[in-house]
Image (cartoon, rainbow, N blue to C red):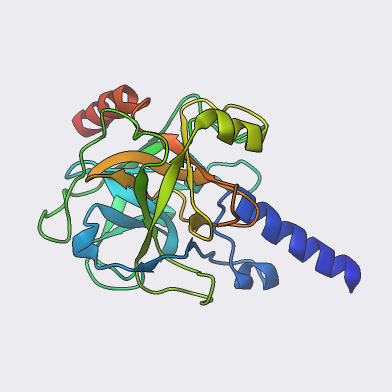
Length: 266
C-alpha cells in the first residue's frame, strides 16, 4: 500500500514540475489529463480571443495561441508522450472561440505541425515551442483574434497575464477559461532557483498565483502582445519564490515568423 502511494505521489510531483497536464484521474487510470490556473479568475473569451484549446482525442490537453488565420503557437512537449515519443497528428484538434474547453466555438482539425529543431526535454526543457497549421482558416471575430508578437521582454516586476483551463486550487476540473496576473522575474534570479540559465526563456510568478500542470502552450501576454508560451514550473505551483518558466517569444520571433510562412505556403 505504502509503495503504491509513493509511486502515485511521485508521478503527481513530476507532472506539476514539468507542467504536464496531470489530473486526479491520471493517478487512478490511463486516460485524458487536466490543467489548471492557480489563483486566477474566470475570464470571457472576448477578453483573451487569441486563447485556444489544443485537444487530444476530443478532450482539452494544452493551451495554444492564435498567430494568424491558420497558424497556432503552442508548446512542443504537448506533442510528446511521457517516454519522449511524438504523438500521431490525427489525434489532435483545436477549439477556438469559446471560454469553455468542452463545447462552443469551432473545432478544427490539425493539418501539420513543426517543432523547434532545438527542442529538448532532458536534461532540462528548452526551446519548448511548436506551430500548428490548421486544416481550414479561422473565421475571425470578437472571440477569435490573432495576437501580435512582442518586440521586447517586459521589465522585471511587470505584470503579465497567463491563461488556461482545468484543475484549480479549489476545483478538480475547471470548465471555464481562467486567467491570472503574475510578475516578470529576473532571469539570473530564476536561474539561481532552477540551478541553470535556460536559453530562450522568461520567468514569471507571484505568491499563490501561477500557471500549472498542463496550461502548457498557453499565452503569457503584456499589453495585448504575446511575450511567452507556458512551458514548465515548480513542483508546487504558486509557491512564493518559485516562478514558472515560459518560452521566450521575443527571442524566437524570427523562428516563428519564418516557420509560419513555410507552413502556410506548403
